[in-house]
Figure 1: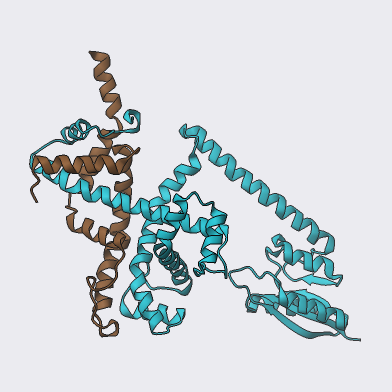
Figure 2 (figure 1 turned 135 degrees about the vertical axis):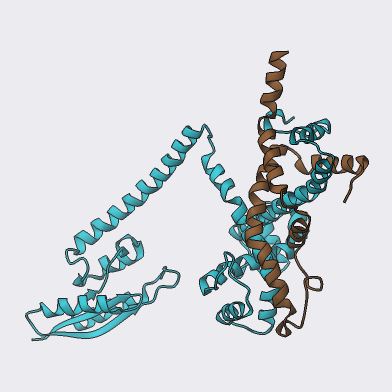
Length: 312
Length: 111
């Protein structure tokens, strides 16, 4: 009598996974037969429907076969995956975690959810401790401030890449062709080195937000002046048929993104204006042999708050 | 470029306006952190963009005849103006600026 199996891989099949399946099948007393194999391809590591898993389960039911999962890994933390498997009512075997059955799978999922909560609590507590140690009640804000130069540089970098991207789009290049061309033309990735697709995609997202922000800046500013709420702004942009960022229509989430970027760009421009105004002044002071302290005395004479303790 | 006293005063007034509710020490700190990051990531890429645009593939364009973002133009201007020891001077200014109030308080207490 044949012992039927349906094999299931997540991402690409590899030798290790295949060997695990072969080893498992070799332990079967009755002659094993694989009736079908399904491979789930993860896009951005988030398949929402687990379509291949559903097909594999349907196949198991039809053939009265056992589902053999090549590598369960950390899939026990994925609610949608666990739900499908728990409600399927089929026999399954996980090669990398053979002890997992229906009950244990449910327990593992619940445990992963608890772990997530604990992890998030630990992060919050850690930030609290950092706050207590540093005496700063806004540690999270401080961390954001530390990252600000890098975030701002990434936004400016997207502005810099914009003309090249516009040219590539005119030529009808795909994203892969863009990566190839950038590498060939000697325009390196942000931190130097060759581009990879995922890196370009992140920058393209920033380019897109920058473009949209610059296009609709006057409209948004005028709506904000008229005290429009975020929801009203979304409605107004939809009414004016202004193309949304990614989805078909504007929503509050997209408006928030736009407003955040608008603020970030304003911030960047303000810091730049400050530096551009300051540099000629300190150059002049330097040529007059002023010490740093004398320079600051001049600033103070002009009623400029030197630090927050002396801010008005 | 030499500045007259009037030009310095005008610039200081502009700096006061730009600062708004932010102190000079805070803005100096922000500038000190931003400039090296921009130097590392943006400056080299401006040169690369220039080379890419100048190629036949891009119809021999240059930085002047493309619609470059104002923020990038500002940074190009900063890189032009920035002298070798400016970052050090900005850091010195910021270090003294942070303790400015304390110094004033100490002087007041002594008096």
